[in-house]
Amino acid sequence: MQASSGTSDVEDLGHVRRFLSVVRAVRKTAPRMELGQANVLFYVLSNPGSTVEEIAKGCGSEDVGSVKKTLRALADTSNPRDSGSGRGLIYGAASRTRRASETYFPTERGYNLAHMVAELLEPGSRPG
Image 1 (cartoon, helix red, strand yellow):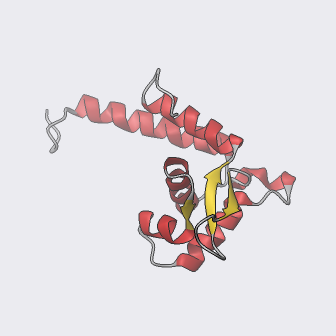
Image 2 (spheres, rainbow, N blue to C red):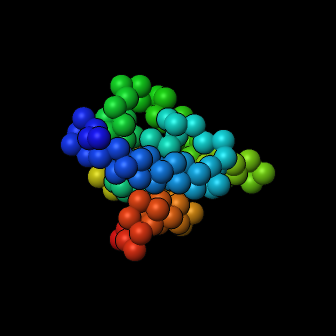
C-alpha cells in the first residue's frame, strides 16, 4: 500500500520510528522540554548566530517576547538542579552588528544533542 506522498507505509513507519527515537533522545537530555522550546532550540542549532527576531520568524512566531522568554529558559544555568527543562543548551552573546541586540549559539551541550539527533536521523552522519 502506498501512502499519499508516494512512499510506502513501511517507509513512513521507519520515518516515524526515527522521529520517536529523536523525541526519546531529547527527553533524555531535557525530560521536561516543551515542544515550543524544542522548536526554538532546533532553530538555533541549525542557524547559530541568529537574533531573536530571526529566530521568531524562523519558528513561525509573531510573538518575539515569547521567543525571548524561551531563549532565556534554554540558556539559563542559574539552577543546576533544574537541568531537565533544557537549560544550558544555548547562550546569548552581544551582536557585533546590532546595538542592544543578542545573537544565540548552541553550547557544547546543545551541539552534543544535535550530534545525537543527526546520528539517529541519518546513521553515520554528524553535523559540522
